Image (spheres, rainbow, N blue to C red):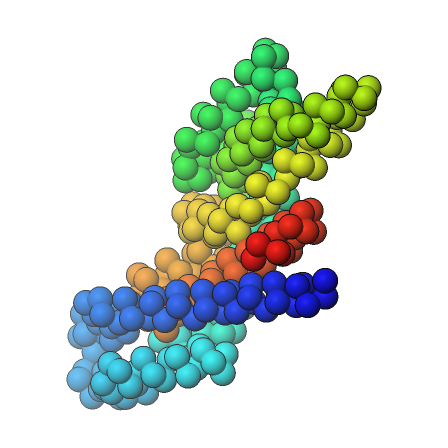
Length: 306
């Protein structure tokens, strides 16, 4: 048993490390191959050639591409993400500061999405013919089709029109709601289908025949049995939170990783772009590890199949 757990954990951690290394290296390569570099804005501004040459030498831009790639990959191994040309600070420190803000935003959004989506999914899946379930399913589909950017614009309009919520930069509620509502709708759809499947499973039919109360049958037995397929997508859900946060953070002036990524792309700061992708890959990998651990906890058979 302990051997199975150790092998399972080792495989998942190794897969997470490969994921982080691959996405961050790919981001560096794509950003470096794109037209322009960290000195393009200086050239447009008319900075003298000597200053630009010294900057290129300091940032290592005068070296061959393969040498730059080798230095970057070795830096990943040493957890040294280089220096930001825009902010003239270590990328690791910048990413840590902004990443903490994005992680806080994503955690609140994921918590809200879970607390909203899963119970409603159990309700609509267990009682599909009830008018409340049909209404909630319709609303869920409409919200699911709404991108986070549209959601945040609607929420900002409502907040400004009513004055119920502050729209000042740094306020957490509106960006958290904008990120959580589409995710809650996706979780509701998944949980609803999983609950419907669980309700027709032989063990639940047998439990109902033994006289188990309907409420306990739905909210304990069916809910627990339907969690496994839903937990399997939590890593993807966390990835969607970080991808959606770029637009949401920009619209709400939230000082997070998404806004930093936008500023890095705008400035052509390749090291910072790759560092932001590295941080996003770390969060995605951590989310996958947590989801795998929860799935293995809910259903021990997952460890045997991994």
